[in-house]
Image (cartoon, rainbow, N blue to C red; front, side, top):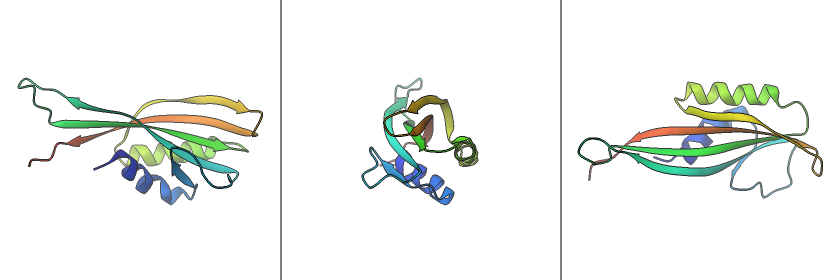
Length: 114
């Protein structure tokens, strides 16, 4: 169970190129970069973790209007039971000509028994 693989599976149907960490090829007019942020354990009364919380940041880069892609990403994430923890417009990058929008997500996984 991995937030990165679940994000890839969730976002691939949107047909926006997606990579982890950095976009390594020639960048198209729109693309997504996913970066893992945190892994934490939820603790309970017995101090034994039973939930693994994994968080990641989804960065959408678009040379044109980003709102249609942003809305599709948000709908896909909510439909796949991701928790959106933050989202917002980062800014327009004058050097590259891309609008930059971030969506931070968390996914809760039950711990597997050995």
